Image 1 (cartoon, helix red, strand yellow):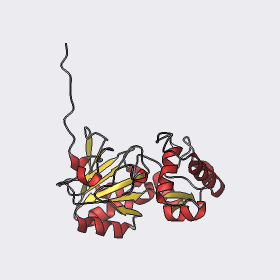
Image 2 (cartoon, helix red, strand yellow):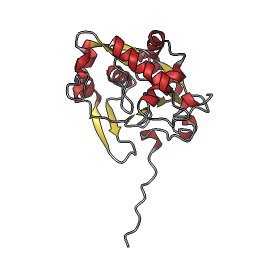
Image 3 (cartoon, helix red, strand yellow):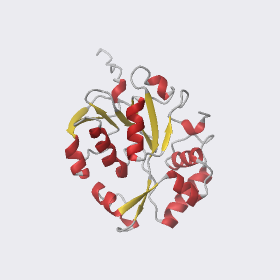
Image 4 (cartoon, helix red, strand yellow):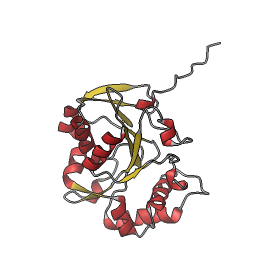
Length: 234
C-alpha cells in the first residue's frame, strides 16, 4: 500500500491567508501590515465593449491603453448600491461564491444591469487587476527590488522574473499568478481565488508608500479582518 503523501505547510511569505482565520493573525511574525485593495471596474473608451468576451478578450497592454479604471466608490455612486460590503457580497453572489443564506441576488442583478447599461466590465476574481499591475511592480522596484517571484495558490510552483521585463511588456505577465513576492520575502502581493480584491503585505512604512504611490482603493486590515470581510463586523 502506497504511503499517503502530505504536502508541507506553505511558506507564509508566498501564499494567501486561508479563509477561516484573521488575515493579520495568519501573517503574524511574517508581515507587519496588510492592505486589502479592491480590483477596479473597467470601462472601454477607445475599443468596443463587445470585445470583452472569452474569444476576443483584449490583451493587457490594450486594456491599459484603451480603457479607464472605475473605482468601487465610483461604481457605488453609479449603481446606488449602499456600501463596499454590499458591493463585495453582490460580486461574490454573481460568481456563486456565497451560500444562499448570505448571498444577495438583488445586488448581484444590479451590478449586472449597471455593467450592461453603462458598458462597464466588472472586476475578475482570483487574479491580479490588470490596470494596477504595472504601477505595483514599478513601486516594488522603487523599494530596491529588481526581481519578483510569482507562484501558484499552494506555493508548490514558482518562477523568478526580472521586474523590468514585466513592466516593459505587460502582455508578458504570466497567466493567472495569484502570488507575487520579493526575493528577500519582505513584500507579498496575493489574491484569493474566489475574491475581487488582492492584498499587499509588508512592513507598515513600505505598505503605506506603495498604497499612496499606486492610489490603491481599499482598507488596512484590522486584527479581526478575514477573507470574507464583508460578512462580518471588522
